[in-house]
Length: 403
Image 1 (cartoon, one colour):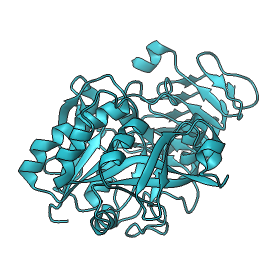
Image 2 (cartoon, one colour):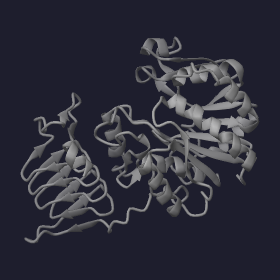
Image 3 (tube, one colour):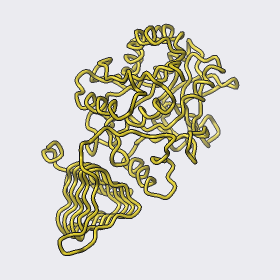
């Protein structure tokens, strides 16, 4: 885009739906597809959309996120020449407040880069979207702010920020959906929900900041309502928009529940997943791990290790075990005779000899003991649990998870 877009990624804050399984305190570092973190997909959206100048806004105290961003800068090539982690917000506060603080920090960047618009992406979910058509629509609509918005079934939007849009496409009302009936716009079928990402006309930034000057901006609904009352706010539906090289359109995933997080990764194991990680026209760069390549090897008795329809990340070893339809993070070990099926194994966990694991989320550093059965109807040891959906969650004790 020849510098016409300035990219901003807003990080900071945890993911209540996934804690304490993953990413305590920082949703941007939530593992996904084994080797990636949520923030990697936001950075890929900027890079693959031709945005050369990208900034990450995060709390000053978040050393882990800063280190990850630094490693990502080294793997993403020359595209993110201006990528750096900026202390533009407090470590505590609501997502809306962090967004406001990030926008305030953009004033100097706009003066330095002179962009046409600012693309603001949230790092607490996954979005794969070509920003160039969004920028074109934003310009053609004459919008001050354009929201990435998704039509969701009325049963899916409870607790989300929903939008009522006029005939001209302008956002007229913003509120938090308290029930499916209240969210469905009277149709009972669907509601338009904000995805958390948006574009701001650079010339409108002072007016945006003026509209958000009140301390009453405590949540997403109040933030957008303040903007809608004073500015021209439009919506953009990304789901039917083309992504270069992809067989599907744009992709969006928000881990509102453990089951949603699990299901999104199980889809990656299918022959034609909705999120294509192997698209050469849309690469997603992972931060360098420094780990050895993944290895599938026979055990000392000659029993062959096997991995079928699975993603296996660097540093992992399948030593005479069998892994089917599963996602393995970094440095996972599956020992001799173990069988893992339809599961997500996060970084550093170990599946012992002869253990059976089925339809499970196994947290970082967790150990499934030799011969133990997980996912066969019995609850795991605390703090793990058996969800009502039948998904088994295995969590390492706090000392093991933090080691």
